Structure formats: structure tokens, C-alpha cells
Image 1: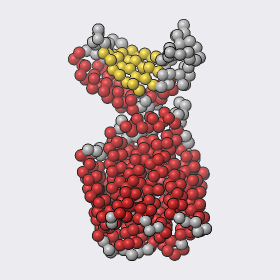
Image 2 (image 1 turned 90 degrees about the vertical axis):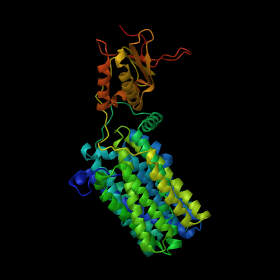
Image 3 (image 1 turned 180 degrees about the horizontal axis):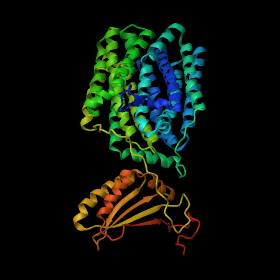
Image 4 (image 1 turned 120 degrees about the vertical axis):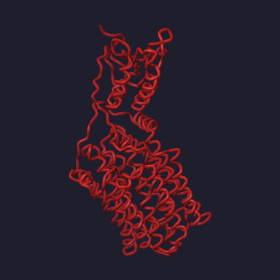
Length: 551
């Protein structure tokens, strides 16, 4: 399971542990740590199984690819599902798939049917369950705890995973060496059942929208549009994808380093993974201190440098102790990078779209990790293991330099959420939810000396409205009366128009007030709501009466 980025809090401070007072969050959080322990054990077991039955370096590296590829393929869809359906049921479905697939893997290995492609297939299926579960779980944090505790809850998710990471791989290696692969896979299945039972027992209140559920097509479109219009999220996605592509060599090629360079077995592999987890834990514990003295951009650069140093250590080392030191550096860089990137996405996303933005972010990031794992495995097979790790180090230094193009911006506060105080206007037609398209026209009177400022505000207004659902936004000026301006935009249906207004935030309302201040008319700007009526072909009206106003 992936970790979630921490926020600006000290992991040992009362504020950070405050979410654990919430019984529902505490129960699922603890169950998630058990599941993470099983997942880490399974990662060691699958990687070592592949390394022992396949002589292909590419097949070994593809284990990590199979673990990340489902998130790349499915995340956009499951994010829309997480924002439109019961997140608790989505979490349960994802956990169920993970448990069933893990049980299948244990049975197949016990019956002697293990083959490289079978291992990859089942690993892919387990990852599909994780891809379904993770966006719903991360988006549910804000449903379970108070708004002020959300950053602390997100920090606990990160600290919990990285704490388990210090013991999970070593425990997995010990179980594989002492009891065999079948036992390791069976224990993993039992670990997956723990959160399954917890989610079944726990229920939490979720804010429900008074509007009908979005269609999948509209939900995906809205999520993609919001992400595309958020500079913070776009920068995080770009840096995360490049970082995942470059840094994936560390974990993807580690089994080969242990087998070929260090001459070790599963215990050595698990111990080195524990070194990676220890570095990650220490970095997570000190992350808030580092953020007080360094910007997110500099933390990202240092993370890239630390992971590059890790790759160099692994490329040249023949000593397990030296490799462990390098992996501790890599773990520290790993968690520092993902913490900064993840918190940027979390705090830039309002609640109505958070499942989708998280999913889109992880889709591209996991796609980068999956592609990088395959790429570095191919380089190792066709050239050498050391050459692949050295190239990875060089790529990480280049990722550090990309801050000039995609800088991470500071975002200390929580993401603004919608006011949801909008009341549907009275109209003369009996509109149905799917009636549309709806056209909105707002007429302004602006004096010549205020035009430049007005255009700046309207440029910002276009961004705000387009981000929450407006389409075909235009601003027009009257040629005969230059002081008259008309703002126009469309929504596909009447429900989409209502949903757009429900998504506006306090900051958006303040922008409306600034625009209103430039309006020179004695009355407020006139807003006119229209519905398009096609004339090319006969068509049944999308409302129950004539489209002429009632008297």
C-alpha cells in the first residue's frame, strides 16, 4: 500500500495524534498498519520468488511494474467512483479483491503452479484492489475527522506506513527463509482480512450533496479539468512522475543487487529494505522541522540528491553495511519527496474533487514508477546492473534541476472548500435535472478607466468558473455601447449549473464582490438564465411545459 504525504506537524506533537481520539479513524488506521505489514512481507516474497525462478532481470523489475501499473490504468475511474459513491463500500470492495487475489497466490504457489507470468498476473490483481481502495481511503480522512485535524491525520498515515516499513521487509525475509513462501503468502492474506473486517464494522458520517450523482463521464471530465487548471497540482504531477521514473531503479533492482553483488538471500534483502524504511521513518519524523527552515522546492531537490547518492552506493558497493547506509539515504529522500508532493495535492483539492485529483496524481506518478521499473530492468539486462543504477543517479540529478520549470509552491493552509449555500433561482419553466444546455449571461457596466482592472478580474473569474464546471466562457464588449460588457458561459444541464454554484468558495465570492465594485450601474449586474433550444430537428422538450415564461 502506498503511503500518504505528511503535513506540517511534528509526528510527536499532540496535534498529530489528535485524530487517534476518533474511534473510527483509529480503528481503520491501526488495521491499515496490519495490512501494510502484510503487503511489505508479500513484496519481499514475490520479489524473491521471481528472482529465484527467473533468470531475466526484466522479469524481476516487472514485479514492481505490476504493482504500480493498475493505479496508472484505473485511478482516473476509481477516483470518480470515490467521489460519487459510498467511499466505505468502495474501500470494502478494494480490500476484498486484495484478500481474494492474495489467497489465490498462496494456493497457486502451494500447488506448484508458480511461473513468472502467473506471479505478475496475480500481483497485478492485488494491485488493482489497492488502486480501488486507496483513493477512497485517502478521501475519507476528511469525512472521519474534523477539518482542523485533517493535516495531522494525513501525517499519521505517512508515519504509520514508514514505521511498519522498518520491520515489514525484514520480517518478510525472515518468514520466507524460515517457513517458506507459502507461509508468507498465507500470513499476508490474513493481514488483508483485518482491515476488511474493520471497514465492515465501522461507519462514519459523510456529507451528502443535495444534487443528483454525477455521471461517470462528467465526473471524470470535471476531475481532469480541475487538475489541468490547478498549477500546484500540475507541478506536483510533473515532478512526481519524473521522480518516480528516475528513482524506481532503487527498489526495482534491489533484489538483483542482493543476489548478484552481495550474494545474499531473502533475509539480507529484507534487512536492506528495513534500512530503507528506517531512513524513511527518520525523514518523516523530522519533516516538519525541515519545512520550517527550507522551502518545499529545496526539500524536493535534496530528496533527489539523496536518492541519487543511494543509487551510486548500490552501484559500487559489495558490502551489505555500505548498501544499508545508501538505502537509508534513499528512504529519507523517498519519503521527503513524496511528502512534499502529496501534501501539495491534498491541500490544493477541495472535498468535492479530492478523490479524483489524488487518483489522477497517483495514476501518472505510478505510471512513471512502473515505466521506470521496466526501463531500468531492461538497461540492467542489456548492459549491466551498475550502469542502470548510475544512469538512475544521473536522471535524479536532472529531476532536481527541473524545479526551474515545475517549481513546488508553498501551500500551508487547508484547501478551500465550497460554501454550498446556493439556492436554486426561481424560473418560469418546470426544468428537469437533465434540461439543458443552460446559458448564463451577466451584463456589466464598466467605465473606461476601470477596464484594465476589470479585465484582470474577469480573467481570474474565467479561471474560477471554468474550474468548477463552466464551459465556453466568453467575455464580450458592446460595439455600440463600449461601457456594456457581457459575460457568457454554458453548462450541459440544469443540474450542472446548480452544481457549479454549490462548488464556489469564500474566495470565489470575494472575487464576485471585487467585480461588483467596478460595476457602474445603479442596479447590480443583470444575470439572465437561458436554455438552448435546437431548431434543426424535431425534438421532445427537456422540460414539462412550453419554453415560454408562464404568466
